[in-house]
Image (cartoon, rainbow, N blue to C red):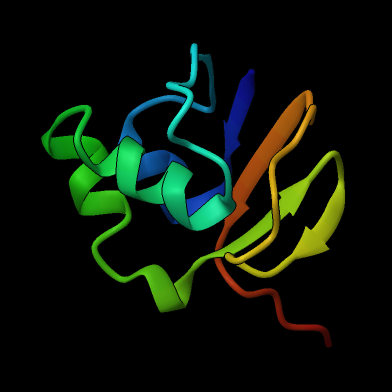
Length: 83
């Protein structure tokens, strides 16, 4: 699965995208966040404030309880403001 990171999430993780194999236990976005936090200190720092991160599954904004299913891409980014 392709995981994409934007803005300060990308800066903390240290890359804009990565392809990872998900364990079978990862079923929801919340599960994925929990898994990513275990990868290394950079991922743990990026997801330390889970409430400050938004997510899109296959380019559709979702909540963390959303099922991942057969998604091809998940993106993490901070809240956006308009102007």
